[in-house]
Image (cartoon, rainbow, N blue to C red; front, side, top):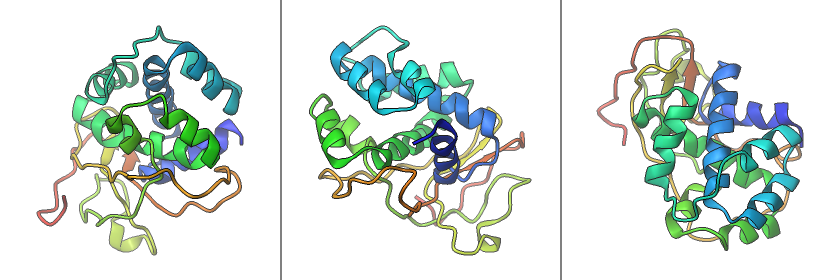
Length: 203
């Protein structure tokens, strides 16, 4: 699995187009996860990932009491986002990571984490899409087959909020992100500075 493939999968999950912003989001999210893990677990995770992503995992001091609420604040500060954007978009990175790991690796990682972290670190599942992406991004109706699950990011400006679906059990697959097709799509990442409108029917 290569770094560029991982970032491409993140972009698909969050329905994005700004690669640089997706890389910042990815590095910040993996850094927060690595902070939560024990030193040994963080080193193991780093060894399973491309070198650059592995460095993000091990770059921060460890805080094994860190829960997602605090992690989202760290991700927002590191990636230059509003807090609600980090809440919306960071799960796309964690879902990408879950899909990239083997079942054995993911189960081992889960053993280090609390239930809220496990819910986030699960392969994404399809959810109802919002019909109002940020300006400059094609509407969902024009994207054949697209099934967005989260929200839009407008180059660090506020966007809409949407929750991530969790999973109660470890996923039953062992392929890497480079070997399997992406079954889901996520939020919109664009360079627009306008905030998207919430669809009254979305969650």
